[in-house]
Length: 238
Image (cartoon, rainbow, N blue to C red; front, side, top):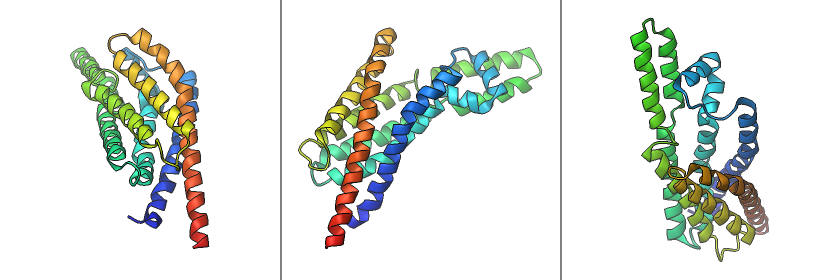
């Protein structure tokens, strides 16, 4: 593909990265307003019965939206880096895409919404008990408790680390972009690996990695904006 052909992809990536940047403070606001995800199946059913949108948001819908944006944000990064470090950037993109698929497949929101509707329409106690058990099964297979959810995190953070390393030596990305990318994804990967075994300790990493993610997405947006500006300037001169 020529540079002219990849510019639209890079513009799309720039928009997606900007949306990911906005999603961080939006997520904080959502959690502050509606609260953290619920643990009890019955509480989840009640929450989704009262307000389906709130129930879905409380069940990590905002995280799924954030993760899904990687499908659009990473191709632009790959095509910029393809001549600099093709293998590393290509593997990073494959890991990211695989992580997104795993994350989407492990999201429990719409399954719990469906079970919630069945629970409140059930007329006998046995059916309701079975539906509560079904809800427990769904929760055990969600993005925080399932194997697919666990490996989704490893692939997503691993891809973020690799794409940041692939930027080393490239004139299209700043040192701050590289450092913040390795720091954000590295700390996130450490906490993710620790979470099933030491959840209290892994929680501490989340307070540190947040600011690095803000810096990383901002710098990626800035670098892509600069890349497009330089390309347009050179194209006009040519």
